[in-house]
Amino acid sequence: MKLLIFGATGSVGRHVVNQALEQGHQVTAFTRHATKVDINRDNLEVAQGDVLDAAAVEKAVPGHDVVLCALGAGRKGGVRAAGTRNIVAAMEKAGVQRLICQSTLGIGDSWGNLNALWKYVMFGLLLRSAYADHVEQERHVTGSRLDWTIVRPGAFTDGPHTGQYEHGFSGTDKTITLKISRADVADFMLKQLTDEAYLHKTPGLSY
Image 1 (cartoon, helix red, strand yellow):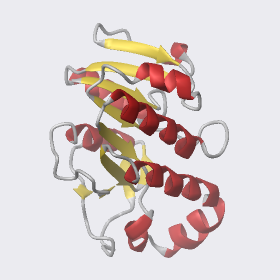
Image 2 (image 1 turned 60 degrees about the vertical axis):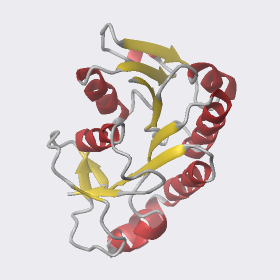
Image 3 (image 1 turned 120 degrees about the vertical axis):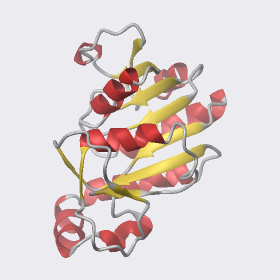
Image 4 (image 1 turned 135 degrees about the vertical axis):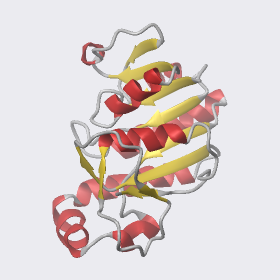
């Protein structure tokens, strides 16, 4: 498939790019800094641009089969929501339907999965703005006309790519660890390319 990856040089996006290339996909890595893409592969192209620049996003989207969004917090707050809004608008204009977007566990009906630390200290205090950014990001996705899947991973680790994790659990499941490696987040996102079980759904992801 022809994939366009936003957040391609971020901590999750790098894994998405690498694994997609390993699987033989044609990948376009969208990034503000082309020099950060340190891979030289025949099936990799780099689109330099800012996700907050609607015109740059609109230029990059046409011609792709699937868009994957792994935007990080960026250099200022609100990047995920504002960037995702531009991605959705560009996709709707270009007629590219499939969007796989990485959010975070704890949004919406997955709030019940969190423990007290995450509810009241991390998202309640330390990461309150990041939480609000994800809430707004998901609103842009779910309100779109796209064929979307929102992936909600637990806290990131630098663990290995295992392909073994829990996904799609209920919003009241307390047995999960609330942790997942970045490599396994990428693994699950790419599995959605050929699996429509989570179309218009928001699966959680954790060990």
